[in-house]
Length: 486
Image 1: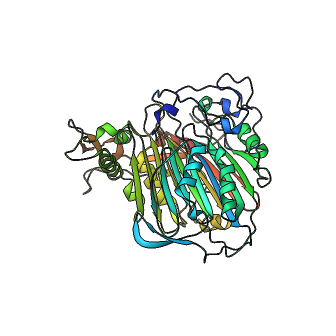
Image 2 (image 1 turned 135 degrees about the vertical axis):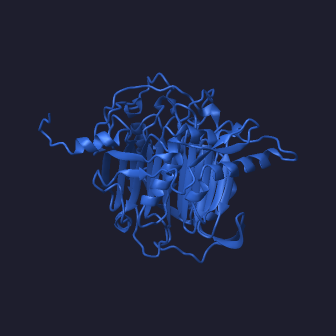
Image 3 (image 1 turned 30 degrees about the vertical axis):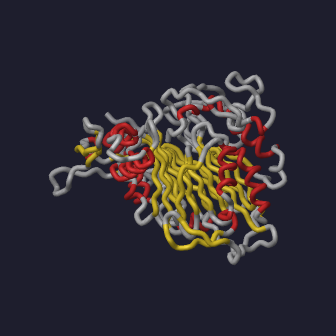
């Protein structure tokens, strides 16, 4: 998404991929791009002056918006336990109302944090809270740059752009101690940046991020983890840090079984146009600015097909000016979240969920069909038990069975043609037939990497690209290797 233009820049740089901590799996792709974020941070860096104090690292000058934005998110997941024992005490908490239901909510653990506490956490990451929804199990916050989810004993924070996500950890440790909690498990992950030179300390390289985690005050006493790189370093790859201090307990009721993340690039232009604010009618009679944002947010959610991706869930959407979109959805114990950066040249959309489903096949197909990207990266982080429960997993299937086929809608067979909303001359959104969406899209898996870290955390990452000539590919598949055919 693109909510805060001043943090954006279109500068990028190339460099060496030397010194990557650990590479697991991955195949060479046709598009070779080795980025400078893989180079260890140096004090003579020409992009940023070195920052010697973590307290000063957030005092950065905003950059002029140039129409390019770092869409792929950084994700931090922190799990706590009560420091008095290894079991969750569900009898302690406070009753409160919720914006999405009149039923009272028993707020325990982290859900007892005040809004002012959450504002401090977000300020460390250089983002702000815009709206929230809640149910009996979790609170979900739409941020100026991505999302925050809070369970009684787990917090998930996603930020995009040039945010400083890791600077939140020390604050989270202090807030947890005030609630009688201590860190149990920490996971940090992100895809390699599109514009690595724009990032601020401590995110100028994965090496710098690891140094920060290992050496920052108040952190190293609890975070004894390891860093990993999955995927081809010459293409899209995934950085992961995991620190596991878990004391296994059956009474610990935390939904951390698995998290699926789909990161989509080069979105169909008909789709990206839906997320420009000026495509919708402006200044209705008697409508306030807040009312307009709410109306346009709902319109974008409906006309894009996003609402149908989360049936039965409470949805909190947000449209941004001049463009961009975010959405949180909660359904029982699970969350789903979508973030969209529609700018030409850096168009990006992400979908993440921790739903415990037996097969992701239909969900993945529906998500890809909604955005129709040219390529996407999919990651899955789960414990061993969660992996075993997934019966249909494109991460472990053979290359042929791992293909993602997004069916089109055929004409002349009693079905309506697929429609793509468009802006009319007066700024409202109408629909038109899209011949491009009438044909099926076939995505082939170009690379796959997986690793098991700590005790039972399984990390999987795959790259999928749009197959341009399926007919030619099928002919080649029938050719005997090592043989010439006249």
